[in-house]
Amino acid sequence: MRGVRRGARGEASRKADRELDRFAMANEVFHITRARSEPCHRTRGAASARRRRPFSTFGLVSARESGRTGGAGFSPADRAYVGSRHIPTKGPWGVDEVDSEAYVSQFSADGSLLVAGFRGSRIRVYNADRGWRIHKDISCRSLQWTVSDIALSPDQQFLAYASLSPIVHIVNVQSSGKESHANVNEIHEGLDFTGDEHDDEDFGIFSVKFSKDGKEVVIGNNERSIYVYDLAANKVSVRIRAHTADVNAVTFADESGNVLYSGSDDSLCKVWDRRCLAGEKSAGILTGHLDGVTFIDSRGDGRYFISNCKDQRIKLWDIRKMSSVVRVRPVRIVDWDYRWMPFPSEAHHFKHPNDQSLATYRGHSVLQTLIRCYFSPMHSTGQRYIYTGSSDKSVHIYDVVSGKTVERLSWHSSVIRDCTWHPCYPTLITSSWDGYVARWEASEKLGAESWEAR
Image 1 (cartoon, rainbow, N blue to C red):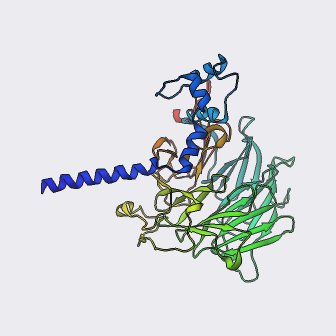
Image 2: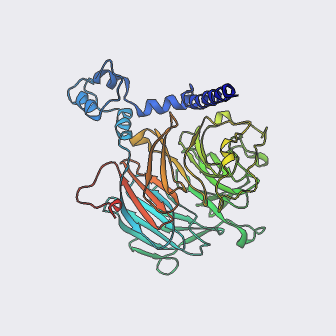
Image 3: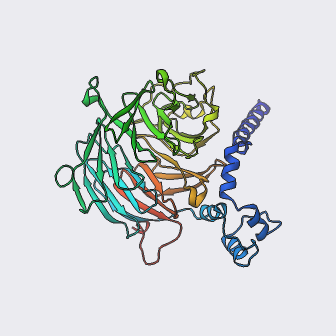
């Protein structure tokens, strides 16, 4: 019997090794990620012809300044490599402290503004270039429970905010006044997503995004649908009955705006091509999750995206692997509600019989709320990492290629629902249900006391 047990342990070890091998697979996305986040061939040759240890920032700068790179500056890959070695783990320092839960946070495309939304009716916009001063203090209109999502227009002129209601409101964040009270001193224009067949009290919006050209807004809702709003025409232009349960996440795949990704409580991720929506049929379906999808982030190339899920896993997807139908249904996690129950220990071992994902990232916790995950910035890290909030009060940062946890940021006293990484600098913002919006940096700030010292 002892020999049998040893054999079983050996088999378990071999299975674990095979799981890790998934991250060494010869897949295009892993090669692209490495190419974008490691020194280019010219720089590697200039720094050292035979080198196995990681390149230091000093070594790369020295090679550039001494002319060994042929007079060329850093390539985007060189810059991303240097940036990816400076993960924001120091701190945290304070951005804001509010007496209600922080639900969402988001940097603007250029990183000059930070937006945070709180339970109740408050949104604050901070000027990241001016010491995190409040740029706009917004009192929202007609909210149900909380600000469920926010989105900045690409030109950073307008902010869309959603709630568990059928109206998305638009506010001008560049107007002269610091205070913005809905329809008191400023107009918060409402985009009505309901039709005659809907009961306003039952309609809730979980996800809102601007298109890259700023001409459209897309939402996912508890009516199992995706709606696209044409801002110029001032009406809903597309209605898709997309899933069989709440649509918790929807986003544009790339700058074209033609392709959408969605994730739902039905455990499916779907791809939608707006150029061929006959019969509300999706372009494809991706299976692999075991429970409701809480968030989706596109890599921006129209091919890859990640999803967070109540099955406590992040998955990386390639839409070229999608299928037209659901071939096999997963094992359902029964008698469990993520809002107030711990995740069943046996469910950690469940696997989808037709998992189409490229890789799975584990270690964080998705409980109580729709926790979000993202690729790290292209400019500063080459999208080398995936980072996520967690109900264990931490931010988890995974290496896309190896699948390993490279950092875990812990300080908050409650759930971290959302977090956002500055597009250019090694700065990461966490927004937590403890009411704190906190800032993490790659290095200590001289003369500034961090909240860690409290």
